[in-house]
Image (cartoon, rainbow, N blue to C red; front, side):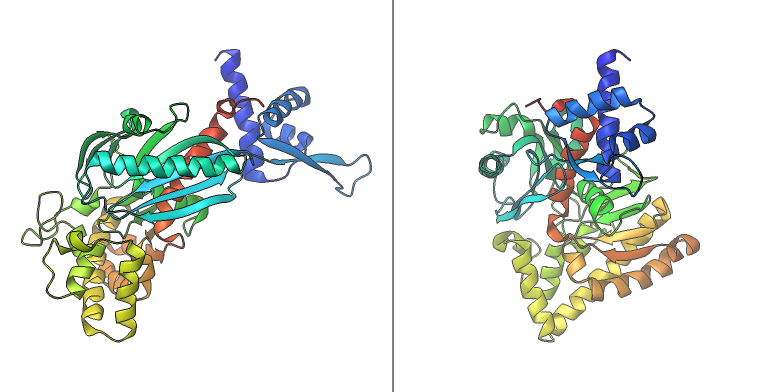
Length: 403
């Protein structure tokens, strides 16, 4: 490696150490990283100049001698923006480098009935307003990651196909720039379930888990897989598209063009269809609203003792367990995290799904795998998207300009 690469690596080493270990003196960082004190001083000075570290103190450690100043993560002027565009909403979640939440909002939007251009114009508008809000807070944006429910070609920031959005071959980053987003801000895109899985591992119910599966509970169903502590993406980055695995060839038509896909059995649209007699298979598209609103109606009817809702939820739980058994047999996770509306109905879904998993899963693997409800709700993907931006800064602190 050349000297520039070595220095970038050392800056990352120091910054990540303080980020993961918390407050630490320069001498403690030197011991932990193996770098000499002179090098540490130079690196810390640069990280301070970039607004990524600050010193507080002094700290009294109970020992004889002059108390030492303490390094801690700063990044209050560095923002990470995670966005999500889904069937019936656009979400924005922004934090600073230390993870302090700055903005958390979701806007209802009917992406099903909008062409990709209109959807991306709307997304760009939300991004521009959010960036303006961050600027008023004195925060400079380090990057944007956009979560999309579909197959993603990350290298080109292109959505190969997103069946429920009706997108095919959409170059998201290019379209956002042409719609007004600054070309100076790095933009990346990723699958919504992959990003939600990262959020669960970094700040959710799966913290510390090295093998887990996250299932989205939206109109569609996606899957994020963490194996050996790393996202499992496959050769082309398309791993995890379990929502479009056919489980009932004679079932309902799916947005992907096939029939009987798993999401036609367990997606929010499936629950609404089963719990609301008289609606045709595609009727959900005509009354799309924010999923929180749609779910609130279902929960209200459930609280009132509507037997149709209980029957529909039980049916979803049954198919959820059947699909989970396939995932356990394939990936042997220790935990299956249920996100989105699954989490809100977890008390009813999990017992039914667990019973079906125990019946169909490989005995030992199923016995050692549990279901858990996500605490992050419908915001998990956007939160995970912001986490990706933070990770990029931790890996390359030189991406943040010296002030």
